[in-house]
Every structure is written in structure tokens, then in C-alpha cells.
Image 1: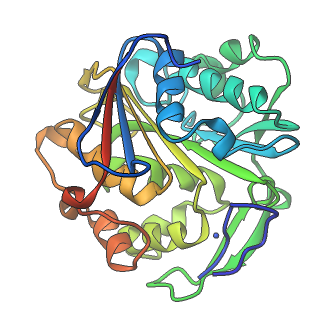
Image 2: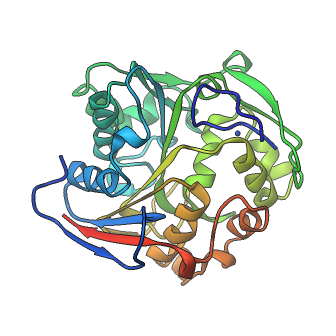
Length: 302
């Protein structure tokens, strides 16, 4: 792989609440996965970051940080088709607290224009966080072509220039069902950072293409919003939802997705990571550990 940015983001073949209860399931060292249960988005995000060593492990003073939530559909927050706005706000505040020079929320909505961000509550919520900007991707001028080494099927992809120039990329997907890929979590969230999504459905095996996209877009940190989850009729909804009250975080997006699959009965079925083809492909490509039995998982309640 080739490092193209100043720190941490790779392009290639790319105050916790005072009282909480922490349970280290597998002892020793920094956890691979932090699974936080609670009701306050801010407290859960803060707890997850603390267990991973603090926001300073990811964001340094003067960094240019890109946040990628799922804000693609013009639906209300309770449909669970988009990342909860208060989860995004909590992450943004942590980045600013760490001294980030710029925090940019980037999205390429399926429903074009500002309406998705307005309807899902993100526009209103971000007004409470001065200094955070929003970039809605659009024409080809917003993207740059990147070649993918060792690809299964996707040889090149046009990626957001904002992401390619960032010091830090934090993916903030929501947990939901997807009719074509079983789930839409962190790996799938990266499709909102590329120019041509249709080719994934028409020109490639989508699962192999998603694994290839993960070779290119590797977030420094993935924070999966599972405060509520869409169980059916994803990704657009409306469908059945459940309030899980969970935030799951980790450095490796593939591992976060592998763990995320087990949080709920997406598509009304119980699945293992190997039951989701794009997670299986990514594991086979060596892009992340998908054997949950080998994870160091830290569970926290706030």
C-alpha cells in the first residue's frame, strides 16, 4: 500500500461520564472493538474514545479531519436509515477538542441536495458546533481517480478529493439492513465518498467491489451508530427498527463491520460475519480480522 496523506489515512492496492462499568472480555492491551451501551450519544462516544486511548490517538492539533456519516436519505432520524445527528455532533466536538484545524462532514446523498441532511436532522444539529463545515459532493471535479492494486474486480475508483487530502478520516455509519448486501455498515458507508456508485450494482459483483473499495478507503477510526437499527427494507426504509442503545468503535472498519453484523437480526435473520459476502471477501483479502473469537472486545455501560 502507498501512503498518500500526511498521517494515518491510507490509499493503496487507501470526559467519559464519571461513572461507568467496563468489562474487558479478552485481557491485554488496547481493544480491537469497544461496545458501549447507554442512552446519551455524547457519553457513549466519549466512552468509546476513552477505551481506545482517547481522541488524541487519532486527531492531533492542526489536523484536517473528515467525518463521513450516513446522511444519504431524506428521512427522519427515527427511521434509522441515517446516522443519528447527535452521534455526529459528539464526534465533531471531540475532534475540535483535540485541536483539529478543520472538521469537514462529507456526504454524497442518494437524494441529491441538502434535503437529506435537513430531514435527518444533521443540518440543525451541526448548528450547535461552530467551526464544523459540510461538503456535499457532486460533479467529477470533487473526485480524483485512484488505481486499486490487487483488486478482485474494481481496478480504479474516483474518490472524494476532500478525503484524499485529509489527515484523518472518521467513518460514522449507522447500523441497518440492505436488500443487496444484507447489511450497510462501515464498508458500505464508503460508497458515499465515490463518484460512481451505480457501477457497483451494474458492472461488478458488489461484494467483491466493496472489498476492493476497502483497499482504497481505510478510515482511521470507525464509530458505528447502533443506537437504533433498521432491521428490514434497507437501505431506504421505512422498515422495522429497534432501539439497541449501542455504539461500536474500532480502528479497523472490516472488524467493526464483522462485530456489527451480530448486533441485531438484520433482514430478520441471525448472521455471522462470514454470512455477509463483502465482509468475507475483505477478510480473505487480509483487510481486517473477521473472526470475532479472536477479537479483544471491551464492553462499557454509561
